Image (cartoon, rainbow, N blue to C red; front, side, top):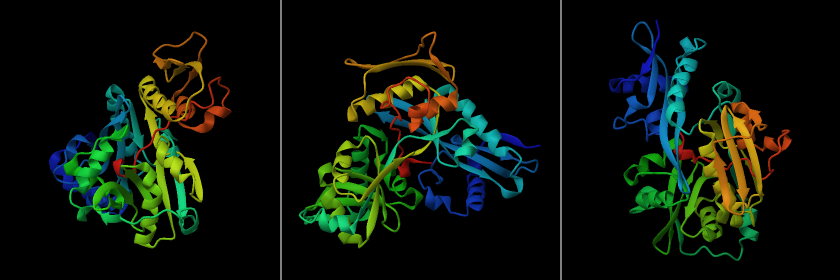
Length: 372
């Protein structure tokens, strides 16, 4: 008989062997922030054990506290979903995810994951949030930035720049929206998913950082002490790596970087960032709607609904944003997936719901190296 339970610390190697076999990768290299013997593996992992005592499946979560302005949201990033090929179709993934969901509902504001939409819709997840992509090519560099000088800018591997990891962690932690990064763990965090962190140095002084893909054609994260420097930093980037184009990924709320990039990038678009499962609708709406109002002045209005059995009333007026745990008697009633579709995607404009069109989607975003 299969047992579903929390993992034990001494099972770290067995579980790591299982997930490496399932995904055909070395997770100690791909995800060193959690796949290392110093991490509390047993606290984030649930496993399925067969009648012979062997691990045949596992699901992990990464507890995270997301700072959004003055708010803190408790989240769990679900990942490490692994089922041995011989035991697929036996509902082990379903059992383990549901165990985690029961725990998360009791104390989390939301859960996040990446993966196939329909697979995880069964568990209450909806693809959404907002991720912008800017494509910059050599034509833009040669013409739009022809009068921008990049002398004194150096792009240097972070491991080769003294104090760069701690500096980068502090820049991240000072952002209005962030997941806290310990300075002494930054070297593990910022290389996850085979990303490559670089220090930006201006005239010998640390001035920011960026995180790139192996082929240097993607910048998954860029943080500068002065956001207006992004033009000359990208010009130095092209000179350093001799690339023909690069795609820069940004959250919606990084308004200063958007202002610069949109003035010269060849292409830009936005789409969903990840899959989200909201447990406390009022908390998530309050935090991210206030964030959105700072970068995109929202229309005044009032909206009342029951979302997944939770009453919520939103008011945007000259005094700011109010989110209350109550609903009008005649308010619209939405199940979880419809509520998340309204809040997290552009589908609201096509739904028969009277709500200001610029309120949603909420600008949820997760940097690549912060994902599980």
